[in-house]
Amino acid sequence: MDFFIVMASIFDMALSGYDLAALKILRMLRVLRPLRFLTHNVGLKLIVNALIGSLSGIVNVLLVVAVVYLIFAIMGVNFYAGKFQFCSIDPYIIHTR
Image 1 (tube, rainbow, N blue to C red):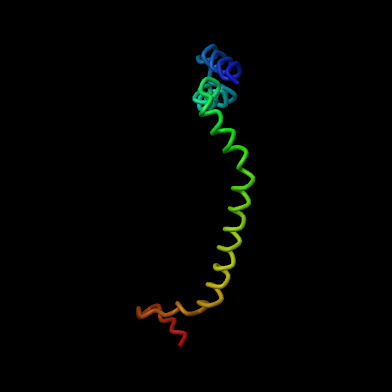
Image 2 (cartoon, helix red, strand yellow):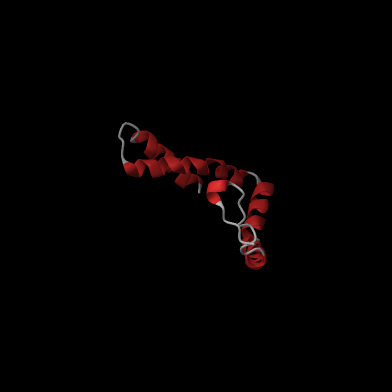
């Protein structure tokens, strides 16, 4: 990982005078520079590995929450359908009662 990040940075610096679309991708790889600390800090590496390992559980929880929101959204649309179509401004009289 360190080798890839360093080589991408060197390649980007070597071609810094040119304005190519592919170089923008290499410049975006600068975001990965803080990941180099993972190889040096064992505690941080352990935390990141635990987060990556728990991604499947997090996705499952997000799916359940999305389904619950969907259920309540459908119920809200059914309960309040047509209830808010009341306007008192003269040109826009829409009274549904």
